[in-house]
Image 1 (cartoon, rainbow, N blue to C red):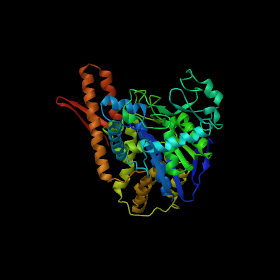
Image 2: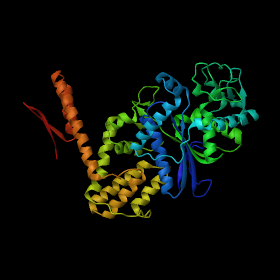
Image 3: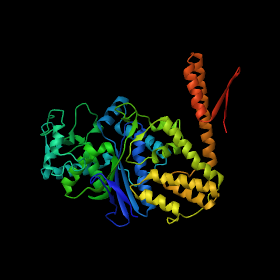
Image 4: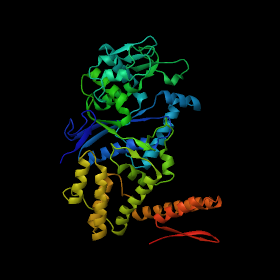
Length: 458
C-alpha cells in the first residue's frame, strides 16, 4: 500500500507521489514569535514532526521548511512594551520555543527561515504582482492585493467571492478598493520603531503577513513543492492568500498537497491566546513529563480536534506506562524492522493511510500484549522500533516508570491535602468525593489520629 494523504484542496484522501521521485519538499507555517508557545502550537509542530518522521521512515529524502515570523504588529507592540529591540525579543522567544519543543522531542526542520531575512524577495514578489495588475498602491502608502482579479480565489477554503463578500461586517478600509483585498506592504507609521521599517520603492514600511510565507516558501523550495502545512485556522485567509499571491505571480500551483492539523480545545472552545484559555508548553511540562505530553498529542489523529484536560493527560501517562512496563519486563533485542512482519505491516498500513497514528498506537498496545505473553526480546525490540517512529519509547523503562510513580504519589498527596481542607471546612460531600475518586484509581485511604495514610490496592 502506498502513502495516502488528505488534501484540503481536493477535500479527499489522495495517493501521494512527490514531484521528484524519492524527494519530498514540505513547507509549514511556523510561529509568530512574541511570547511563549502554548500546547496548541505544540500540536501543530508535533503533527508535522510525525509527518516528516514517517516520510523519512518511508525512504524519502525530506526538505522540511518551517518558517519564523519575526516581524508583526504583536511583535512590535511587545518589544515596545518591554523597551527592547524587535531582534532582542524575537531571539529570546526563538530560544524559548526551541527549548520547549525540543523537550517534546520535536525535531528541528531542515531550514527555519526568518521573515526579516527575506524582505528583498518579498518586495520582488510584490513588484511582480503589481506588474501583472494584481496589486495596487493605495493613497495611504500601503500596497494591496486585488482579490477579485485572481480567478481561483477561494478554491482552498471552498468559498466563493460572493459568499466571502456577503460575510463582510466592516466597511471598506481606507486605501482598499474592496474589503476582500489584503495588504502586501504596510507603510510605516510615525510611532513605530526604526527596526520595524525597511526602505522600498513604495516608501518605508514592512511586509504583510501573507507575502512573507509566499516569498520564503518559493525561495527555499521552488515555485511548486509537494506539501504545504499548518493549523486549520490558517486555511483561510492565510493559505488562501498565499495561493493568490504565489500562483498569481508565478502562474504555477504553489503546493500539490495542502495539509492542516486540527485545533486543541478546552471546554469545547479552541485554545488560543486571544481567548485566554491557553496553557503554555512550560506550564504543562511543570505537571507532566515530556513523553506523556507527546503521547497525548500523537495518539489522536492530526486532523481531529484534541481535547485538553488533566484527565486526558493522566490517561495518556497511564497508557504510556503500560507500554513501558512491557519493555521493562523484557529487554528489547537490537533488531531491524521487517515491514512484512504482521505487527509492523499493520503499523505501516495505519501510517500510510493519512498518518493514522490512533491505529498505529493501537498496534503498539497489541504488540506490548504479545511481548508480555511471550517474553520475546525480538518483539520487544520491534515495539521499541515502532514507538521510535512516533518519537516514543526510547527512554529507559525503569526510569520512566519510577518517575511516573513519583508523579502519581505527588498527585495522591495533593488530593489528600484537598480532602483535608474540605473536611476542615465541613464540606463532607467533597471529602467523600475525593475518597471515591482515589478508590477508583486503586488508592485506599486510612484516617487515623496522626493523619491520613494511603496504600495501593492490589
